[in-house]
Amino acid sequence: MKSKFFIPAATVIVGVLVWVAFLLLCEKGKIAIEQLKYLGVGFSLVVAGLMVYSGFSCRQVGGPRYGNIIRTAMLIIMAAITYWRIDIIPAVLLAAGTIFTIIFALMSELPDASEESSSTLGQAENKTD
Image 1 (cartoon, rainbow, N blue to C red):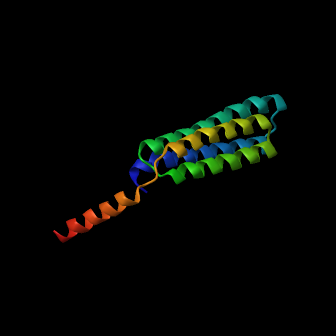
Image 2 (tube, rainbow, N blue to C red):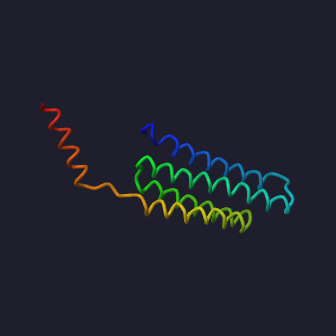
Image 3 (cartoon, rainbow, N blue to C red):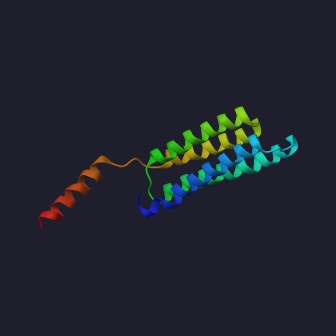
């Protein structure tokens, strides 16, 4: 992995770990329903924020579009599991994060095939010199 993609990858991993910690806390912890709503909102905002920041920073360093598509799929799955196991409000916040990652995915540019072929051609010419 290139060093410029370390921050986007790390924020995705931290986002997933925070979400898993939230699920374990809600499943195994003895939390009152009132506290669960506020705690769920906080955790969901953190997770969605980390995922959106990861998509934004990946786009800033010229990352590929499929990274944001993967983040979107992850957030949709997280939102579905959160709705099923916890509550609808945290699930809606996670689903709202998907909107931003979809926007980043659509704004990202696909690599141009002619640019790739010209760069490999230039590398081949440099090797022969």
